[in-house]
Image 1 (cartoon, rainbow, N blue to C red):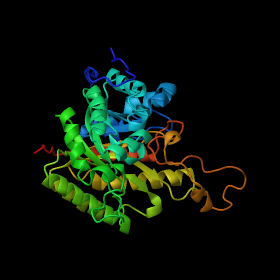
Image 2 (image 1 turned 120 degrees about the horizontal axis):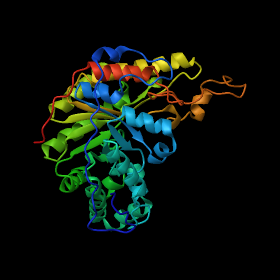
Image 3 (image 1 turned 90 degrees about the horizontal axis):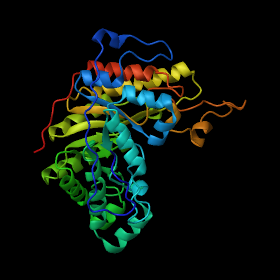
Image 4 (image 1 turned 45 degrees about the vertical axis):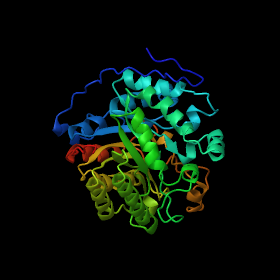
Length: 394
């Protein structure tokens, strides 16, 4: 039975009991290369392909959408070994009012995972865009770390039996402002650059056996900002390791962007070798594709997205320390990558008849939950590239 849902702080937070994971039977290797007819259920899932090489596949979800849409629910159950709360675990969602903890949606997602043999990745504990207003004010006023410690203590133990990976700090790097590259957010302003060490140590007290992750974006292209971001992030990781912070893995978000050209395989490979050389594992945490050309045919658009994903995964999965891949959603109909006014402005007059390009097509399934070329590019890459080499915590 699922735990109670307290509306105020409860210092003895209950945990969700572990249930056995459902073992899926892998199809024969030969079937992996077979393309399903349009709209058909693929013979081999992304989860099975990843498991074949010792990795995992998962997706960000919103539990209200999963509950409301049977076709989405079926795809999540079939394709995913992990589910990631898209917003349900954000601090401003769980504690919008000080001391009033709202666990209902996250509890529902955890129960869904347990009932169906899935794991959950803890996304995310500290993120500058998800701090409730009351916490920003209180931290500035008091400089009291116990505000964060109490939040961690309310959330981490509650889901300890279903979550074994925690994104402790999300997006700490922001090039162009400080020599160390750290983002000038509320955590840095109040606690200084070692807030990351402190957050990792705090998380370790509540999750002694979990993998603790620092997660960031903008690491894929050979452009000045991303070259600097890779350099600054690597320096941060080196410092954290040198100072014995309890860090186990790097999360590489993997938001690909066709407006930037093609991913830089040499840059990504060199960066990942350096990360692995620090004894850290790697997880691709938020893979998707932002399109550049919305006036091309659907077939061309889908193939360009698939080709970019394949280029990325070919180099990423070549590093054996990569534990798994999650996409930021399964279906285009729920992508956070919306078309913007800037996108429309790049194609003046293209949709004067009143139509439009539809959704951004940067996820494995289209709006009707049919698999796209991106699905097959991912599945083939996950199936064919040998699996991870484990890294032990020091």
